[in-house]
Image (cartoon, rainbow, N blue to C red):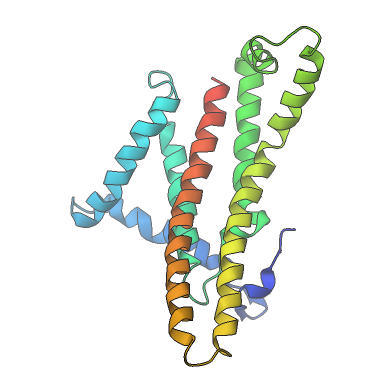
Length: 224
């Protein structure tokens, strides 16, 4: 499962050392440079969406007791979005299409939320297991259902992101392979379809990063 559809990934090796995952570190190496320069159009381009996301995440969490917590989710959104968009370029490794990458982001974060919640807000965590207005007969079943739904959260976060990236890249790969064999009359239509699909995948790359960050924020707000 961690290497699903890895056949579509470019193979780069240097002395039997795979260099595919270096593409995931480019954003980490390039983005911090913006913190050491004066205000310009480049920094304003990044600060505008960050301010919007900060205000939106603060609405989901308590501003007074969680100052600066939204920076974690904004950084997570930025890393996922850049990795998704970079994967649309030819011969660039898409790390977010692998469960080894997505699960490594969701599982430690969910585990830290659970440990914090059960140690600091134990009564509140027990309260979340039984929704308000549940009949007494159904309470044992609701506890089981809520416990299972809570435990599969990191898996759903990881699978959702990886599946969306895999599906888009698979369709683009199949269309790209069939374009080589079509007649000259159908070629313009195939190119237009590929351009529309590339635009859709760019939107999906941004939306998936946003969904991952918003769901993580909601999970964090529940333990407070």
